[in-house]
Length: 480
Image (cartoon, rainbow, N blue to C red):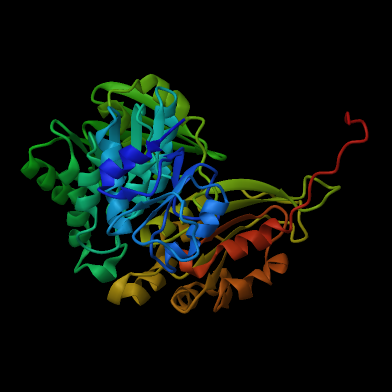
């Protein structure tokens, strides 16, 4: 299916084609480029123009460039623009303008990617749905997502992020959502803002892009909810609120049953019962915001609840897996909670709550008693209070039910020092260093959680734990 013709792309960007072409997708990375994609030669860590020849050799339909790279054949299919990023932005705006899709934008300090994926799961059962890939939520991720949107899309979910003031409003105006959801506001990227209220004001800017008659979805439980309410009201948009203190979507009883969260809520006077295939109060809160958004989009709430119940987190964002540690004695297992993608005080606190609620197994390991074990790495971009924020994690209420905490990085050394001696595990400078120790640090029956800022590479610890796993022995009676 054709996504862009050379004529339509040139009209959108104001660029000049060297020949006719048609593409099926849009790519910024030759490693993931598929045959028929338009390759966009962005300049980031390296200049994308250096990879145009490789992209074309791999089957790219054409390349979006600001100059003709050396060594290309004269008939190489190119769309030449003054500035590649601006060209991608123009293509994104055109992609948004040509579709009749209902669009929801998601932002927030914590939980926006998981919430975006919940929305994708719920809306996909009700129409052709397009959503951001991974965490493509920045100055190039949002226009790339919009440029990739098929014309016949019925629902679109656009994730919008930021790490400094002034980022969100232009991206929201590009996405032009009908519904805009702020999952929460927390001390994330605090080094770029004076205080959390400043972060809230930046998150509220997602409402700047709302279409006429748009709806703002606000977390009523956060301290800065009034900042969000005031911004929506100043722009004249209706709002819906969710949370334990909300009246529109009020969160009630939450039950963690193994790896499942079951929640009761009220939509006004109507009861709503829903579940998520992962344990955690934060999943219930994010899911309620997503359900409020689905309803505001005009989709079927009952179908959405059913599809939500089948959604599970993905790698690095709360995915849970059971690892078999012995190929013969297959009951010798441990449970791994992979939260390695990123961390801040709010999300790490939520991860501690998930770990504290998990059920270790006794009597199956060399130690005999299953434990709740955390591997945690530095949380970055917290500003001048970063040391205190790390040390304060020792006083988190969930810590009472966690047995051992292993710490990684110079900032987490302050948590390590603040922990009670009986909970204090190892401290290491890097994840790679601690990954070499995991074999002796975990045991059958344990529940193990790993979380830290992306730059701390907690994925190395997660991978080391996964490598302890063995495939279950095949029964001799099993059909071959």
